[in-house]
Image (tube, rainbow, N blue to C red; front, side, top):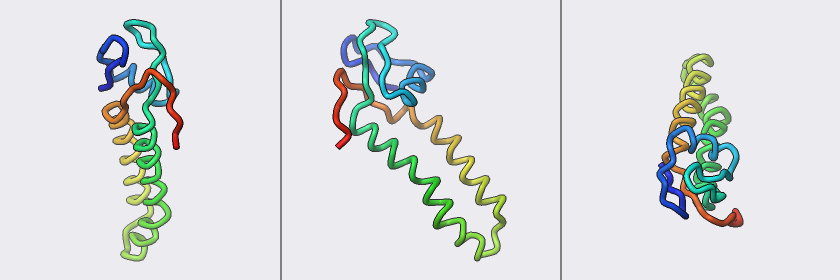
Length: 101
């Protein structure tokens, strides 16, 4: 879980989930505005591409091997659920909003 860069308060799972979808939030302890770091943002965006990769490239391969569409869709849904629970452990915070590139 991330820590506030000002007061080093360790954010809870649900507080981190909220900043993961908003990209900035005030620290619940000291009130300082915290931003998702550039490195964390890049990691999140790369991981977002994995279900797309599965749908576009792996699904046709699985279907050619005789695996049903339901199984490949189930894999994507399971990955998305796992990803949602993985997000808080990858987020790092920053006091300043950093440029993405």
